[in-house]
Image (cartoon, rainbow, N blue to C red; front, top):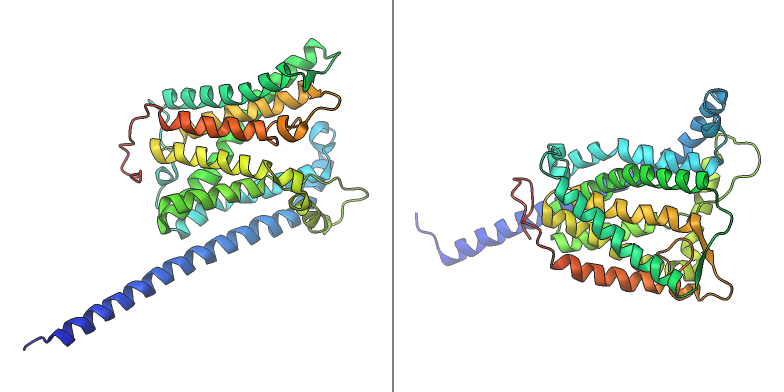
Length: 327
């Protein structure tokens, strides 16, 4: 049987069509998984929050601090709880077969990466805090007791360790790791970093009155009010997006989450202590120096850009783990 040139071209077009259909199928599968995940996390978290609040009230005699927390904190925790609970099903839907593919490897031999990331994160925001204090645009709060200072520091350390670990598993190991299975990794990096930034603009809104079954659903749209504040979005959104890019690059270069967790923890430590120990000076230019949030001023954005340049030249060894994706 003789094959003509027309037959060959026909088979090539057929194969190209199959390839396009496969790519479209993969993209639709990704989008469907992400949409389901987002709906479950936000709507499910809003519905779950009142039940967690009522459960806390029943054990108020044993855990008064938890029971006394404002309702919006229960909404925050519900969102995080469902985000973590749905992470593995999301990864499976995106093709992952083990937690190693989400950057979770045994800690043996990884502490150097973790400490290096912690040092870089600590020093970078220490520059922002020190410069703002040295310029007189931030001042220390007077009258803080030693008990308050020590308690705040230990609380900041605990928060940094826990939140950094959970958020890195979610945003870098989960969302970035899932997106780069379907798209070229720089595109996945930018998209996941923007998601990371947007989530951190959920506004903490107080709830007045009794908590009903739909209180979380009512509160959820109000939490989105932070996106309407231009001065909060700019440059804060750019700073958080750049921070997400830095964390994602650390995962991409090292092949696991240890450097990213350390870097993130160093930042969170300063975010928790800076606002607790300092306040804005009268007539301070907060648009440049930032507020107690530390990263909502242009100075923080400049320092993060410099940190990105420094990170590029760090002597991080290329990942040798089989799950790592080459740069």
